[in-house]
Image 1: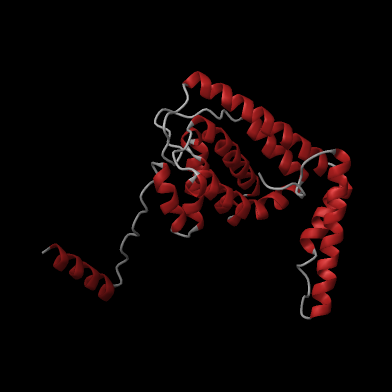
Image 2: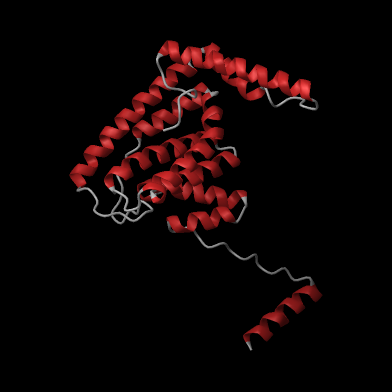
Length: 247
């Protein structure tokens, strides 16, 4: 009977031009709902998902943070994208010590997260580093972030025995301090105009006309030269930047 009534309402609406109320999207009330909201593919739902995670960072594991970093980049929230990406990388390093995973080798969560980091970082790292002010703002947010997690937090994998709260706090503080030292080192690189110019040159080299083999070779040579300049500066400054192997 309910189906008949619904069909009748739709038919009457079509005949008389009555507008039916738009179906409301369910509110985001958990980290599990974040992915579903992003899958909706609308800017509004993406914004809701990003804002929900920002309000509930103490429940967001590395996979969630990395996923929303990509979504933030897609909707041109670059500072948020950088923060989510670096927070996800930091959380991954902490959680693998706090929650020793049962899976080893190819079954280790580090493998999947490492692949995510490499894929997402290839876009976000250069984009945020070519904007020194945004990069500094991201590091400031990361430094101010309380990386502790709430009761009921799930790292996203099966683990044998979690560290005690006191041990977890020590690990979190130590890993965060080390991570920020590296980040501030990279900040010193992006404050060097020559480095940022080379970074932009490397990124922009393959964005022009690549309609024939000669132009492709010229673009790749320009990119190689720019990357070499970046590596020379990193070596001189003794800072691990984009030339460093991913960890």
